Image (cartoon, rainbow, N blue to C red):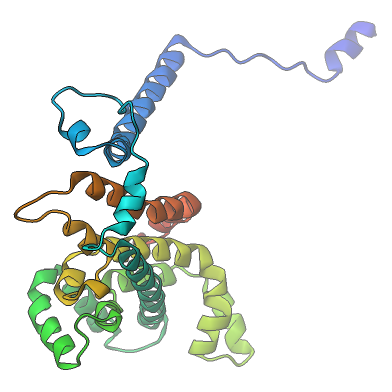
Length: 294
């Protein structure tokens, strides 16, 4: 009986042993991840190293991992430079990034929802026309867009930087693909309560799609922050420069201010790193949820 009780009791856990091939595969994966991490971090190291160096250290023939005397004063020198209003440029980029991202989210999400859910016999044609604009090089539209902005008196103003870029065809495409897969049962429950398309969108769809909105917001903000050509065309006065235009001013036909350029690059990537750190899971989720269903 004792033997029977011992054999019928709770089975003891059996230790899991890895096969030699499994161990080798795990080691190779860790090595690959380590190499990828090092390659990813090298640009950040170079920017930080050169930002805290003198011109002589940056251009010296012998390489040092970090200069013996770190130039922390380069940070203050960057913001004291009278020729480049870096503080103003950072403010302009923040305004353009936040307002531009908010406007693009509103317009693209409503357009995407309308194309996905509102019955209209020409909806597919409108959608194909929106997608077709993605194949037009941005440089082609610069001249007509600049003429319109100039005629409105928006050159060297934040209005000229933000308003012409509010509609984003790519974001509209992503929202439309996402809303095609959104559960219709939730929308039908709202319509039973008497909500129309707009009420359903605001009360049901948006609150249940916040992770996707966050993913598109992160991608859009990064794009707005890094935009260069359009701000360069519109920002003809230094008071309307964005951070990318301000950084380009450190390189002229006569001189190259290397240490301030690298310090400006280090300062400019801080908001992007923070956004990526806080919203990276939404970025991954946005990639997996968009463009899959039709």
